[in-house]
Length: 181
Image 1 (tube, rainbow, N blue to C red):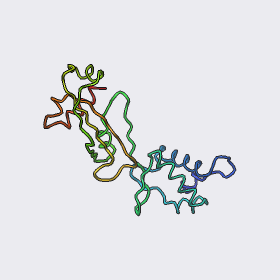
Image 2 (cartoon, helix red, strand yellow):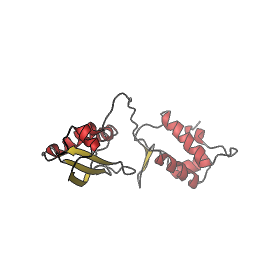
Image 3 (tube, rainbow, N blue to C red):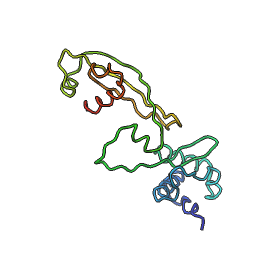
Image 4 (tube, helix red, strand yellow):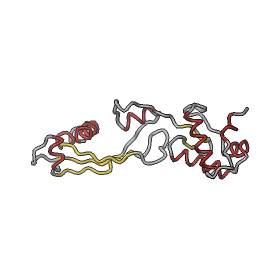
């Protein structure tokens, strides 16, 4: 029996067909029916093999895309997104997580402001009230090799001015972000 046929939604149920198909596809993905980066059947193939409309197949795939389970590449197909299982006992940064998922992270500095530190920054960063602090705002909208499905991170990072004026300020900002939280 064709494994695709097990995904067929039941038109006797009150749940919309596209949600049934999305749920069935999600279960098959988690069960390992498709591996990371493997192509899913096309909308047309799903609609023909499962005797459903292309609109139903498209809407089901849109649900999986919104959940981050798949990525779409126009002209190439729909592919399983790499999944990263990580224990909560091990914390990692945003860029490290992207690398583990196979992306090459990038970011853009949007703003840098030098001002008096807030009360919280004074305490967390160990500054005196007269020490200036630098706040940087960065946007990580995509990756170098392929775009992410949506804006990934907008970070606002306070840091002592003595560190952020250093040539390695990008690394200092990451240190400050972890320290200030």
